[in-house]
Image 1: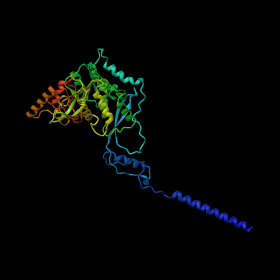
Image 2 (image 1 turned 90 degrees about the horizontal axis):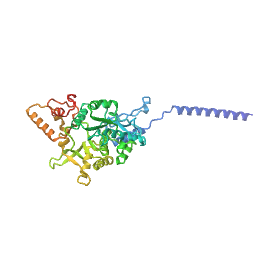
Image 3 (image 1 turned 60 degrees about the vertical axis):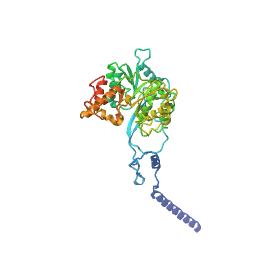
Image 4 (image 1 turned 90 degrees about the vertical axis):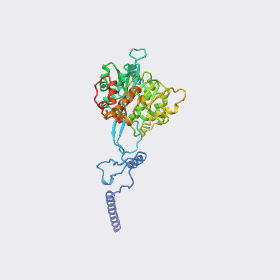
Length: 433
């Protein structure tokens, strides 16, 4: 009997000891603080890796939840990313195949690496893709129609309607002053709206033929090498780079318009002085070599080409094969310069390179001189001589918008003389062109 009692006592003591150990271990588990590892989190590592391949940037702090404990908060001294325009492709509600541009200025935010998502989803092609084609054909009219256009002009506009101001309107005005029987299509999603047509209403009331149509990239570049490039861009497989994507898409769009329809492309800061009626398959030189007198750079602000011209196809091909969104001008003026230098002299390419005086009588770094009025007799003589040169030897004047946007048109300046000669609605604009 005593043995049984002893065994039970031992079991009771053992059970109590086990309960004590369990309670002790539980308190240890719940009260031990686990230290945070010293290496960076996946978010930070990813951000740092991406930054190596980018341009120099200065300081950015990781956005973290305000509710995290101090032991879980990280701060990283980073190269500061520039705030850059973020271009988004959007789909027209009227036609899912019509792609437009919107811009939002956003700061770069560090985030986890994710699988690339498409910039825009384009629905499969179908009968609705003909909406763009039908609108273009309806506007230009058939050759047998009395409403057909003698000159087909194209412009592109990638900014909001509010930015389409006096300068752009005067560019349109000068176009119609020199080509009253011409037709102008402004390729623009923002202008292709009731508000956009209100902006152009003065021209319509005067019987001038102008309209705005949203671009359809899939239609324009079907069966060209750029079709695959656009598809990859929309899937997010192409880095748009630091240069505005809208600007680069405008460079491509003008090529597609001329290749598909033929006609004349103009930037919205080009003032037309004379008729282009005698021009065919023409591009202009921006600069020439002083010693050789050969062109050293071409520009794509003014281009006149037949439909399906082989040089245009080469331009489109070069864009798709060598696109670089980080170099200004690489996909525009430098592109046309590269291609022309390669194909010049080859059979099958019939085109003319006009001297700078034709479209670019003043280069971008001297455009301000055209806005200044005379200060003395010497300046007056220079001004009158330059004005005479432009009036006699130029077909258009590129105003180099970036450099001259904020300049005032001074009394007696060359630009004031040009405005008085090229206006349709004279005395309609302020001194800030």
